[in-house]
Length: 253
Image 1 (cartoon, rainbow, N blue to C red):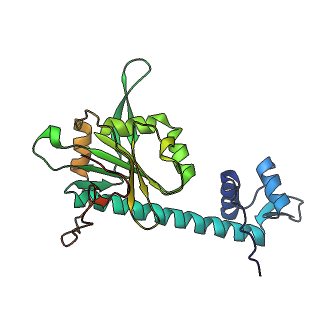
Image 2: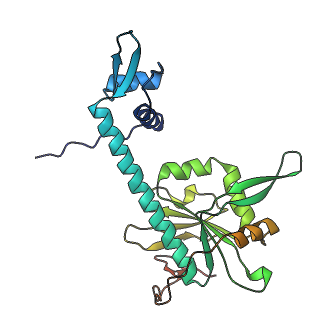
Image 3: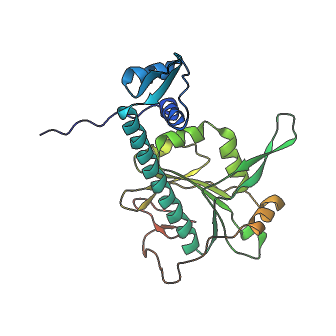
């Protein structure tokens, strides 16, 4: 007996429209997205006694919306798990780590003046040192879906802001979503396997970066992640990226 093939993923515009109709009174938009959803049976039309049209999700539309929600939750859970693992890795290396920081990064404007961009790296960490040139701020950006990675790479200001804040900038990619060569050489690349190993694909080039006063103020207002690794010695042996065992590549820091 053969299993039925999985339904193809809905385009983003169609997913958003289904969610909007589900949450609304169902006033029709009369555009191409709505026409395609009606033709596919995911939306249904109805009319009231005054002849006014409305759209609603049919049984197939409800099932599609539920499926999209489950897929999004699974992707989000996978992303958060990998973010947490990278943050713990930085702690294992003796660094202070933060998640969810909003940091103002200075970028050059077209007129030569400085413009400020808000960056929200998945993991930001520093080495606790009394010497400013030993702080070594590092940004890790985690991607578990190819679409999210490609969207990032189409936003040059986002990557420039990360680099303006760090002495090293890394992308951590779930295995299979992209070839490391697709990531610009300004970033290091780590690949997270399904088994939990982290493989070094490319080292991050060092940047001559010190923390700006705006970053110090943001860190002073925030609380680093609590260290729960007192009894955790991590993985012993092999090359390491702050405590991760690196498979299939050597690294020097």
